[in-house]
Amino acid sequence: MAYREKLPALNAANIRIQKGGNEDNKFNTVNFTVQLPFNYREIFDQEYWRDLKRFDNGEKGNGTYLHLQGQLEERLDDNYWKNETSENMETRRNSWQGNNNQVVVGFTLAYGNRRNPLTKEMVAQNNFSALRDPNQKIMVYNCGGPGTGTHPINQGWFQNFVENGYYVLFPNYRGCPCNLDIESWEPKPTIFNEDVWNSWKSSRREQASGQIFNLSIRNIARDIETVRRHLLGEKKWTVQCQSFGGSISMCLQSFYAEGIEEVQYCAAMIPINRSAYEVNMELFKVVIARNEQFFNKYTNDKKKTKEIVDYFAKYDLKAPSEGKLTPKRFLCLGRALGNTTKFEALHNVIESMHSAIQTGSSQSSPEWKEALKQYEKLDEKGWKNGKRPLYPLLTELQYPTLSPQKPDWGAERAAANYKEFWWVSKTNREIIEELQKDKNKPLAFSGEMVYKSFYEDYPSLQPFKQLAADLEEKLVLPEPTYDVKALKRNQIPTKVYIPTKDMHVSFKYSKENLTSFRTIIQRLEDDEAEHGAIRHTPKKALDYFMFGLRE
Image (cartoon, rainbow, N blue to C red; front, side, top):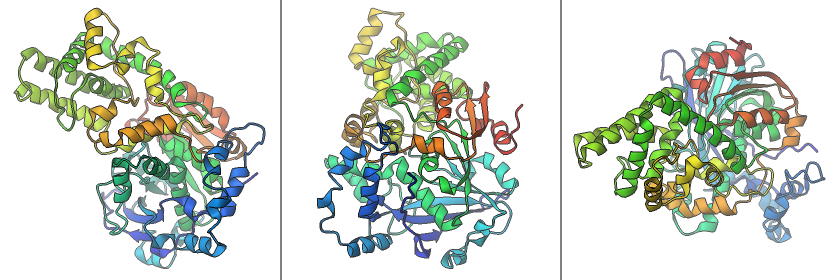
């Protein structure tokens, strides 16, 4: 059964051209913002949701939609609609931009050294002829995340596409700190809305966990497709993605295939048939191998790492930016091992920390100041928990989408199966005792995994501790993120670039996930590339996507 979702229509009042752009003489950009529904469910009519509840796309235990029956039944029964007349629903659908139930999402359009295809006058007149020109190529780039915005000034690779005649659209997903205040349409350093932010910090747990669904992959995909329909009409675009952007692109390919010309996945073949636990079980193997590679290069660092962990467990130390220096927080610096060019940075942290400890000086000493400076570089540039609290909250929600299976701290449960990660479930006292009992006890840095301890170690995450527990332990998604049958059915040309040394997206499950796609026209498994290939070795990845070139 094909189903075309009833997305809202935009008008000139919903789009605002912003100041900025033209940051570099090599290319031009235009920044614009779009008012979008905060909760799409409230603008969809009764018929849409009843149809979706009944639609199981297979009828024989497929599971893709079946969990809707339980989660939505209570909300969307006849009582839900008893006070809703058709006139009321029509008014609500047509006037969403006038109430506070909306979110403002930022976009940047890169267009090279040609005439601006999106001016205030064009928006006011709904004149998008430059974008809709059938000879004009256009691409949307879904970046990694979650909780991260994107901008062309940080994505130098895209210039290759612009030079080859593309317009490139960069969406900043809802929930990113770079999105804008609803009233002023100006940048604001909150997630997006004061009411939502405050409810997350408060004890209104049910309200907060309900609102988190408005930041779902499905709603991000709706935002992007709503903008495409307004700007391009029936014209299709190319979708390119990296990392978490693969989840959004698979959602687009599942439910909004009619708007896609081609999809290009770069280190983005997110496993959609596996739980968070299964994914992390596989990723820990890669992390262990990276630890071995690191400690083989810096042979003295293994002993020093244990001594640092023991010291952090014994003493109350402040982190340079926020919170405490704890053994777990220190070992989570292993996220940097996903990029071998950062091995030296991690080594420098270990060297400087160990040296400061050996001197026996206070945290105010020059030795400690240097050590903390090295630490902060790696911690803040890696996790950025102070700037993107949505990352730990949402990262495991990419996976439990085909069934009502909860994430239930998938990484933490998976860690219990590996002797190198015994420390994940231990208190500081227990860590000290374990290291005293066995001087040769295996110990490894972690990867991109999220643990309960994050909500203790980082003050910026502490307000979300209960919300995180609710999401991890009680979550049932109210609607599917992907439709595997639709992916297998549609005929969108798909190109896949898989780095075999990826520490953040499982190579094994990436290959397994290829069976979910019908028309993979190009596939490259790169034995040298890592997760950030599109940034670190852009020429190889982009030449492959654009020209099918292989070295």
